Image (cartoon, rainbow, N blue to C red; front, side, top):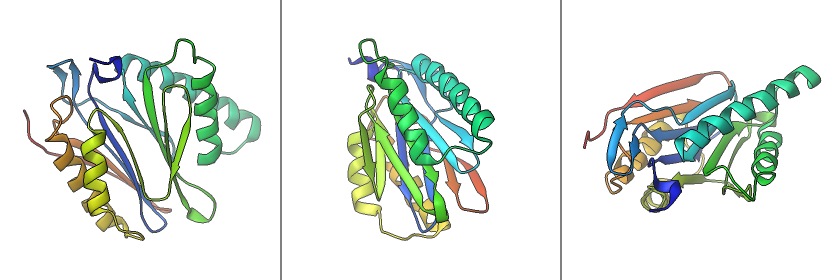
Length: 204
């Protein structure tokens, strides 16, 4: 078993019309043993920027603390919030400087940029970025997430339809992966509001 699969995870970010959604499962396990069923994988950097961290849970929490520290320094120096593109470059740089002993994380970054244009991207554990215009996935359930998203995604969805689509994709995918599941956590972000919802899924 790969170290990335040790705790299990499923992460997905999807783009809509001037909005985006980011969702994760809630299971924290040690291989096949479930430890917690309310684990947080999605973190708010600011109102228009969210970060999801799949992979090894301890590394994810350490990396999150380092990124919050760097973002707060940026806010103090620049007196503004970081753009999603800038934050993606920061995450990439932080990961790459540890490339010989990397954080075992696969981040998903989602945010609203200038003129409310949604930005999503993911990267590997040493910071190689993968940008997308529709959706990005990460975690142990990524293979089934790709299939579900390819089938369900359509461009320019409104916030409510986007929530429905990302939730169905997440729930149907984690049922095909025994290392992730136990419900879902979904954020839908529009220029004016942030909606957070908890999904109930199969509890096995």
